[in-house]
Amino acid sequence: IKSATVTLSKSAEKGQLGNNSLSLFCNYSLSAGDILFSVTLKRKRADDSDFHSVVSYYEDDKINATYYPNVTDLTGRTVLTNPTSANRRATLQFNYILCTDEADYRCELSYATSGQGDLKTNSDTKIVVTATPMFGNQSLLYTPSNNLAENQNVTFTCIGNVGREPQGTFSWYKYVGGQPPGRVITEGIKQVPLTNVVGSCTYVRTESLILTLTKEDNQMVIRCTVRQTTMTETGDGNIQTDRITVYYAPRIDSIGSNPDSPIYSEGLAQLMLTCNADSNPPSNYIWTLPDGTEQTGYQLRLTNLTTNHTGRYACMAYTGWGGQNYTANSSIYITV
Image 1 (tube, rainbow, N blue to C red):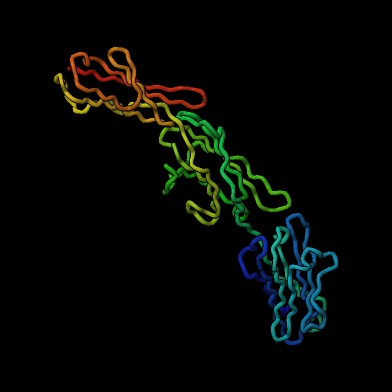
Image 2 (image 1 turned 120 degrees about the vertical axis):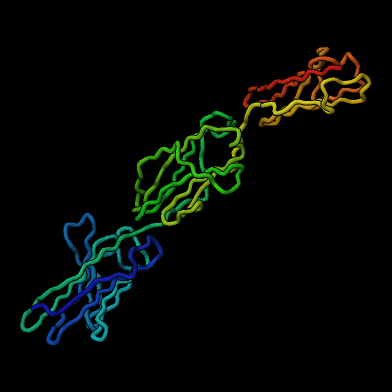
């Protein structure tokens, strides 16, 4: 009859990859007459067909707890604690977690009782290794990256380590004028299958975002946030662009006169014509007068009005980028 009992537990639900600790506790009890031979910790990784012994413990330090000869990955980063008759707990403490620590673990008692020898009982648990995302201090890449203009398609590419267990996901934000709060972007996103980091159990995620630019996007900031456990705009890490300049052609918002009147009297000392256009880069202006002459500037000043000032005054706003020029035109008719 098996009288001994054993329970294998752990100090945390998951092991955090890197310089973090986690302990396995093998607690057991013996009945009167039981003779304990050893406590053995075994391990079975995903590619193992069965459990393999990794540590042997002995009660009351009759023999020091020892790693099995073929076990080299635990030495130097784990601490073994033998059980005692007063505290029947064998411990394996990890002080640094590796991907290879993810496995099923088994604590097995070897004992005898009531004349029966070589009895065994065991308890299992599993260590799952988790890792936080690792986003570097870098800028978010986008193409094309210069002379961006209204109605142009731009592709933003976000690449980053999203950890594991769980693997983080990306969220995209647009900051209009570079200022919070960010607007969540859900359309135009293309995902690439996760890739495993060589020599690690973490994953890299790649996503692309395609935006068709508008003039309102001038000076915007695009942010890529990785979310694993923190569901905010900053998430568990993020990278973002600098402010992005978007060029757009002139649109004449207004053209008018001051004072404003349908008919002006001869001798008026001054009449100011004003033309305002919205563009990036800011527009320059050329006024064409009724007699065909031209003047520059967004304002045109007429003085000492006569009937010769009667006619149509045309405003052309112009700007350019990337070797191209863009214009907008409007006019106002003045009657003296």
